[in-house]
Structure formats: structure tokens, C-alpha cells
Length: 159
Image (cartoon, rainbow, N blue to C red; front, top):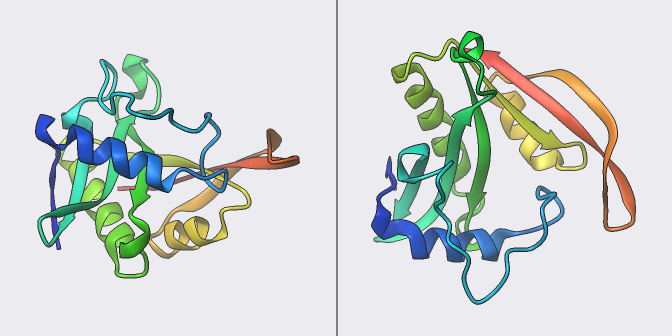
């Protein structure tokens, strides 16, 4: 497996992966629409993404952004998306992406990294905790998904 920075050529593969992995287990936005919505936009381009590649195929990505646009908060980066192709789950792709994005955040001068995860996403929460992230706050019943209220869990760690 190779972890690398995304390139503009990854747009189609990342868009397809995003649609294939969409679930209310982790997504609060509506399902991406077919046949194709651009994956990259003016806020999140290739530079904000690391890609996992196996056998020449994109099998995962992680998106790294700023927690806020405030100058006094530029030392904090936030994971704003993590997806792994269904066929590649359980093979260490998510863990490798999570470790790589922390290294990337350090290279970019970050002192902290944060993320938000839905309370019912137990597999993701376990992964983040195993990599040193701790719960720093909970917004109870922040979202209504599939007929149930779901907590928004804020997690973070020092780099």
C-alpha cells in the first residue's frame, strides 16, 4: 500500500469512492448525487487530501483542513473526511491514512489535530482512540439521521 498526496488526476476515483462509501454511519450531508459531482472544490483541492493506493487503485483517502479560518487557530488542523473502499476495510488502510495525516499536519506546522465523529460510529471511534485521540466534547443529539438522534463527538490530540 502506498500513501501519497492526491493529484488532480485522482478526482474521478475519489468521487466514485466517496459515493461508494456514503453512509449515515458517518455522513450528515445528503448522499452524493449521480452521475457525478466534483470531488475537489475551491475549499478542498488535491493538496488537502492524502490517498491510499493498493494495486494501482485508490482505496482510501483522508482530508485535512483547518479547524477554523481564524489566524489564532492556525496551529490546529482537522480531519474533515476519511473513507476506505469496502473491499479494503480491515486491511490497515484507515490506520495508515490516520498516521500519515498526523505526520502531514506536523509537517505543516500543526501542534494539535482534531476531528468530529458521529456517536454511533463505534468502529471509527475505536480507531481514533487507539491512535491517541481523546473525546474533548460531545454535542448531544446534534443530528437526526435515519429516524434517530445522534451525538456529534469532538476528539483531538496533541501532535
